[in-house]
Length: 343
Image 1 (spheres, rainbow, N blue to C red):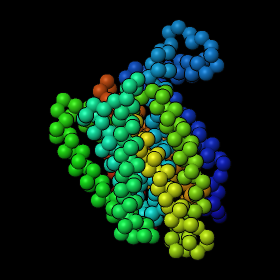
Image 2 (image 1 turned 90 degrees about the horizontal axis):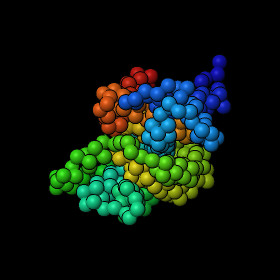
Image 3 (image 1 turned 180 degrees about the vertical axis):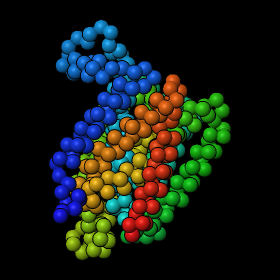
Image 4 (image 1 turned 60 degrees about the horizontal axis):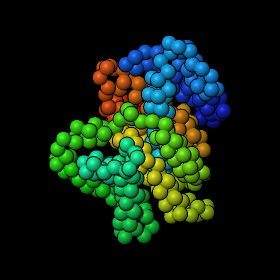
């Protein structure tokens, strides 16, 4: 009898598409104000084809509030999950995700600094926060890779992880220091650091969509090389993989994608760590299947987490980072227990 991973096919992706579509519709319908599924479908259909939306349908809530938020949540979840899967394959470390590089911490540091100092861009609402988060994400990557190269010219996995963890601790200390002197801005900074996609709009969707399409496409394009990394860097080098070049390209793509996500959503933990593990149980370790499946699984996971954050204590809204941390921690313990027991 064939194993499940051997029979993984297009049918599974169709199930992922169906699950993602259902999750998005559910998240648009439910919230502080519940909307009938028929009204939601009618509003979306008529808006798509330029038809008039019947009176009595909450057009503004569906199209201007929930739809952009749902799109942004799905894109952020997909991006973070893809980055986590790529990092775990690249570093051959099951505990790795995008934050292992310290890039998430760097992006958070830049965003917190922008919030504390009130840095803005003319004509934009959160342009200053986005710009500073992306800038500090790239500066963090340059600093980490520079230090790793100074210590180890081969840019070994252990060196990158060690320096990434040290940088994350350093950035976290600076963030706490900034919060201590933030004054009246401390509430907004604290809420942002816990992760939230409330108030996001279609402009953010465009930015995230382009980022996932371009940078995610780069990562997906190196699935074969990530499979080679699974058997070790030396073996990958022997079969013709340019280890340093591939590693740098994937690290830059992951860092840029995480920086963009953090600038819009804040810090959302455990998505890139837990979701690839859960997906790997279905697809197996082959990155040609794992990476695309992680995109769908991450989007679905974060959509459901955001739904819980919006509805659990409504009308009060929880931070999505709190929900993902609680669910992710429990899921990771269960996965770790199952793995150890199977081993």
